[in-house]
Image 1 (cartoon, rainbow, N blue to C red):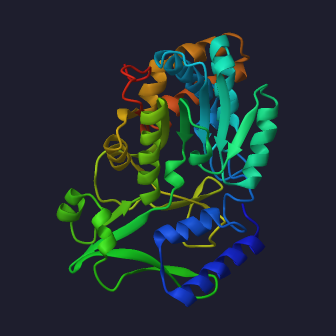
Image 2: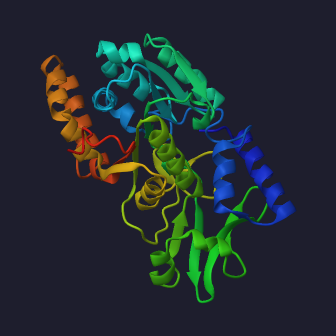
Image 3: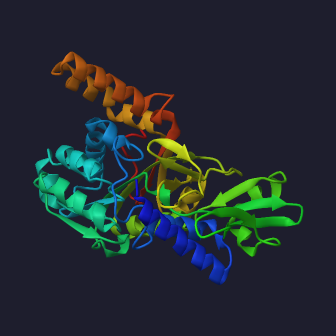
Length: 368
């Protein structure tokens, strides 16, 4: 977790901002908490893994990343085996997923020769961790702060648990209309949620069916950054060819829901308490990002559950192969990881997989 001094500095920064300009949107609060250049949650620390605040699928087992690499190798062949292709990860965490997928994708010599590796990461601290991880992979890589800086050309991209960390706006349906939730400061270090005095014009961003049918007191969310990124990915693959694999927990139907949450040390944490000491995230609205990608000219595959996707890629076969040369303790770990990644009680059903692809791609593994 972030140290107390850093957390206090971030809280005081937020309180000063609110006192100067008034209550801020949930979106602005999330953005500062997660990515403030000095005190942001992701900017100077490592939140991943058992010693951090949460565990992502690549940290559960090498099988996850290896199968993403297999998927990329298959997609590259379906793209017509271009002589140059960018393998890209957005929000690469500790670099575990990229290392695992490169190990699998690199087993195809022609793809190994064609591929160059790009990581999109805004955190200097995490960039350093990723550089150390990739140094052992045998691949050269380039780092960028935005997708726009990744060189043009066909690409195969993965974004695992990225969209859930993009800031959201929240609205509440009142008797006078949809008011926006704001964050107000009650002291230098404490905060509360309030509503705009009247209906917010920004609620027009919500899907019409939500605006018109949600009951009173319903909370509805929209993620402008997620919608914009989906549209950017769609425009990129439509222009240059390729596919973007989006994996995250979320919903597949339009609807009103309050999903903003904070997580610290693998436990739920009050959203407004000690900003910067816990991860802030919200469920991904796959219906919204899918609509944005489709409207920007991409072909969509899915969403399907992570469990179904990995099973179609052959995770059971991979688990059996690993188990054959494992000790009894290792075999138990493999079986546990398989259940966690694919089971109905865990990531297998909670996480969704969506591919934003070039219209030229008429078949993709994992969705056949």
